[in-house]
Image (cartoon, rainbow, N blue to C red; front, side, top):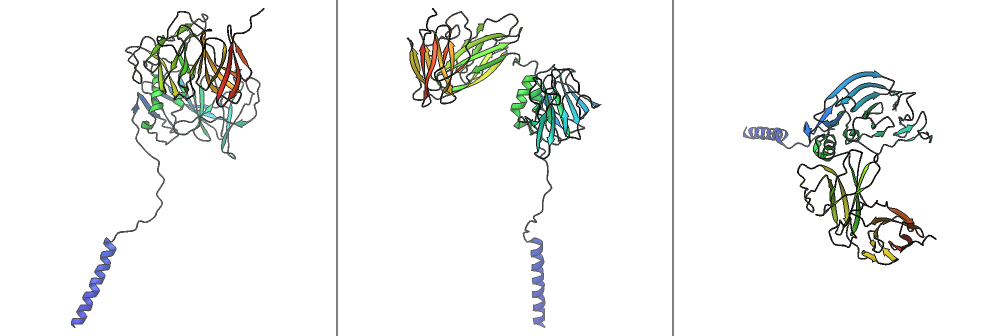
Length: 450
């Protein structure tokens, strides 16, 4: 009897152990496919004064200045975009500014100008080639200049921040076509009343895409600056540097121009703790105003030159202190380390000189110097010629850089082949040889005219 109870107890213990293992033992996870989800990272409603608008009907989104009013209207227009139907217009800001059109096309084709439109603007027609998976372009009425209108692959190199391609349009003013799908397009145009269409187009996202503003601060800052009417950045002034990179010592020419009635500024802080005043180049009364200043960077580094409307304190590598002063433009110059063979060669009499890229030859008896900007082949060299004028002296001269009050018209860069001579009023430069990444020039005075 005792043996029977022992067997029963053993059986109960075994059953209890099995149940305990089933209930409390670690489980091996079941490998099941999870449903695909779309990231829903939260974006602030405002970033740098910009807000994100999401179209309630078609779902696409874009960033715009928060101060502007967005209005939408439903349309049913098949005239402006032959082959498609404009089903919605989104107005950004006042009429005459940026307008966006949603165009549906079951044939995966869009033509950017109506039939029999006013010349000389040629129609641009895009269609999706499903066989190659590419957007193609042709010109139903021929090109403006009578060029080939043959079908070719569309130029879709630019993209929005969400990856949608941007197709250039010949439509009036500044227009971009963005395919939201192969059968739906977003056409963005400024109507001639705005210059910020490209920045807005670059922030367009397709329906359902979530764009994290923290990763797009650069684009949003650029757009906010462009739209802000109270910004200290004056977009009517064009400010540029040439060249923008090279080996030290690097001679750089800064150019500022503005439409009639605009301002070209008068002070450039070179970004290395020094600055200079623009030399105004005389122009006709109906031309753009133009100002030039040159500077030689003697040390390697990345410098941001700042154009302002007056004297501005800009320490090397620091932030410009320009209270209540308009910053008209900036330009970045990258200066590489000096090579062992690089030098500033002085020619007090006509002679020969060999220069590596970035090397400078000062022709002091003729009051000019030239910099070897680069070698594009074994027989081509590009030089930048700078006459010593009111805004600079020779690169090897100590400061100050301003020496006179007579403006000198700048000379564009020149590309010479071996044996070719560039002549000006009182000098000639001949490229005689290119060897071992070095160009040799002969500098002489042209023969007198008999």
